[in-house]
Image (cartoon, rainbow, N blue to C red; front, side):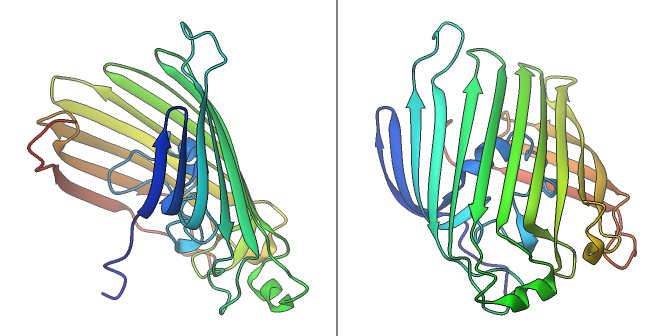
Length: 277
């Protein structure tokens, strides 16, 4: 199929003590927070605003951001017995195409994230991304639901141990997400991911995705993302080599009210590199 092969990441950078500077297509600062829960195999990542408007999050800069200049900084001002260096990421982006907008483009985009992590088992972070739209220059964008700049805000946290992990995110999204047929709306979303190790090789996975328009977003119709996930992993070399399976149990609806089917996934991940990371 025409979309089967694509550029996932492609970037150049400079890595020095305390900071990085990167240019190209790379994971965004927004994903530093959204990635706390984007850990399902073959599902998930739908409600956080990361992969918005049926893209990889490249045009607006929330996922695998396109044509970006990024700075990543570690600031060591907190007591190092309790906290890791504070992480601050910033990003600027040239104007990319607006999905479903017949060739219209964003003027620019910018984003940042801030992450606080303890030395042991807890993280909390926030991120914001803004993609500017000139509605006066292209008023036809209102026909697909756009009435302002694309904005995405997320707060997320995780806690973990040797045999368990739990992460939760909550996002507020404006002119950023679309329905199944490309109509933009304002709304909010949440994702939860959890895993627990039941034996040396077997892990139980669970969580949910929930994304819904605000009540006054009539153009979104009955669109809603609402599904739970139950799955497993059977590992041979930690998470480098494994079998996995998921059930995506759906209560989602398209804009016209039609139901979205359940999704069942089985797969294998096998890292063939001879060394261990």
